[in-house]
Image 1 (tube, protein in one colour):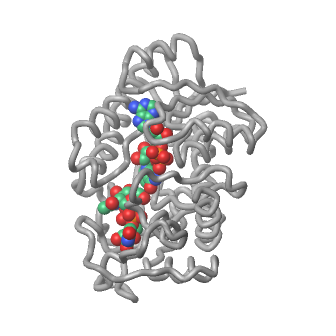
Image 2 (tube, rainbow, N blue to C red):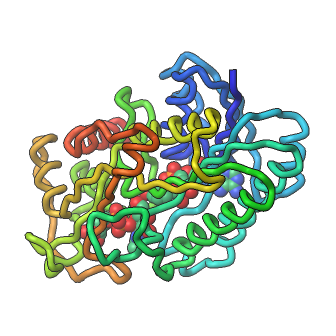
Length: 336
Ligand code: NAD
Ligand code: UD1
């Protein structure tokens, strides 16, 4: 049985991926410092899967802690989620973002090299494309200069991994996520935003739940059909499954290059107003919203061409936007 280290495994995407790994028969060991997650998530993973992953509350920024972990644990592959992810905060605290998102990554890769551990999956983001010239976005679209330190950590992160792969005989896959949303079907795990949510869907569900008074829609003067911006919202369980097939590709040595990257989205773009309408329809909730100015740094439209992932990973998103929105709402209600 292969043993997988999942860093950030109690976070939003990590916890859903741990569930899929356990359900597929992998052994899992999680490292998380609980900086953006709660220990209760571990119990909920056990409830869903009836299996208990190993858990280490460690901080990946502390090199000696990582070394100590690998001295005591043998793993066959690593899925690296742990990072800070708030775009706005990264502008205020760039050094903290580089320390956590880049420092931890380098330490992990060093341990992999030193101990001959192969097979690395990295959480990247469609943010690397910025506003792409052509839609849908293929992997051939150029990487644009990052708009924020957070975005930069994903670009630099990919470059570091690529160089390490070629220099140190490692194999890695970066998954460029579009907009992950939703919660597990069991509604036992989901997204736990701290403070006022910056992302659309948690703000929508909190508004419907009465925690926020009103949703602000950032701009209705974009060059789109209804004037609001377009994104590719992918159910987090579909996204989690993309990690399993990517890992399997590395284990099966089917990768064509030591470093590969794939777009992980649904291939369908939805405008903010379409999301609001779908949410209202599927949940029978009336959403209080107003149109305000554009948010600085936002792009008009981004949605994935997923042909490469469909073909190479034999993976395709299965769940609909409605299913994702309903699960996000059920999760919100449970967490009021
Ligand atoms: P999350 O904050 O829910 O999960 C990250 C987890 O990592 C948290 O549980 C946190 O406690 C842990 N962590 C952070 N720094 C750590 C450290 N130094 N040591 C140990 N644990 C640490 O975030 P998420 O939404 O699940 O995102 C996972 C990954 O996917 C991140 O790398 C993020 O940048 C990337 N990503 C997320 C999105 C998104 O919209 N959620 C989009 C694109 C890419
Ligand atoms: C944001 C990040 C991006 C990150 C992604 C992960 C910024 C500038 N970009 O992208 O780097 O990879 O999250 O999911 O923060 N919206 C509203 N009202 C709100 C919140 C959002 O109208 O209260 C709109 C936004 O303007 C956008 C859409 O909803 O058009 C989606 O927003 P969001 O969920 O923040 O995601 P992104 O902007 O795509």
